[in-house]
Image 1 (cartoon, rainbow, N blue to C red):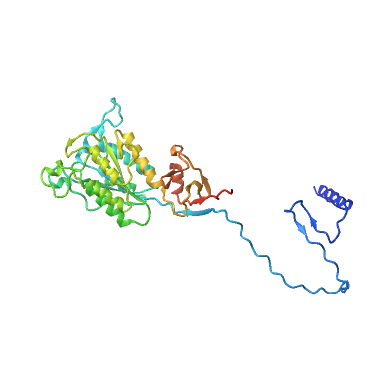
Image 2 (tube, rainbow, N blue to C red):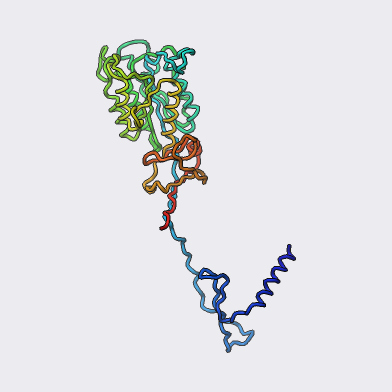
Length: 382
């Protein structure tokens, strides 16, 4: 290899000798055009300086100023992706002992609505315990006996399981078992929402928060009611309590289990219409004709909770600096995340109104102590 280099150098030297040598006063350009490197012409020798005389140093020159490259308008911000606080407000009234065709298969035995809810909450903990700080409030209290009157509407004084990191185990421990048969009481949903909201406000530290209300009917047990009215009169406070939660920055998602669109007697209300009001008041109604998650089997219930968990845990509110979302680019630990039209594929991000929603796989990566960068790409020239 060295011999080859020597021959190449000799060839270049011969070519230079064969060419007409430029005048020492002519500039020398090593590449054509205005972009070439140009050396200044050699200076004429000073006739008063004899060879070997010391050369006086010339005036010192300042180094050329460092020039910043021109900006194209790109901006990069590191986003803080932290697991949100999510409180499940779970209906534990006597009606949850009603059996239903949980798999829409007439050949299999029906199970109680509570059994289905318990199983789906277990799935939620398995899939999202790392991504969400989960907690729960039961309505009524877990130990309400089979009695009527005010005791049937009694609530615990605080959350049954506070929202916390890896809180899934505590949440499941607070629930009656999946095969429980001693589940009683009315439906004090408004008090369940109040307890959940107060708890979230007390632990608020800037991370996102949300409530998921899951019930199989309209609420009763309203304040100030006595006798049979505790159970026959609809508690009209529920949508207002949901609206109060949303006003504090806590959206309320609503899931209805096997809800009837008809006028019922306990309480006297149309559950479908009443839950629609609560979902609208909670600030995050579903798009389309039904504002709440209207589920009629265990699979739909599981899908509803998974969808809500993904929405809550993977939606990023961008700062005002990133106002032109058409130029938005995201990266997780330096790896670009593609923009997608749908999260069906599991990876990527998509616009959700003025926010950004990370798809499930990308969300999981973002919440594992990874760094998420949001960048506005350069504005195209022209």
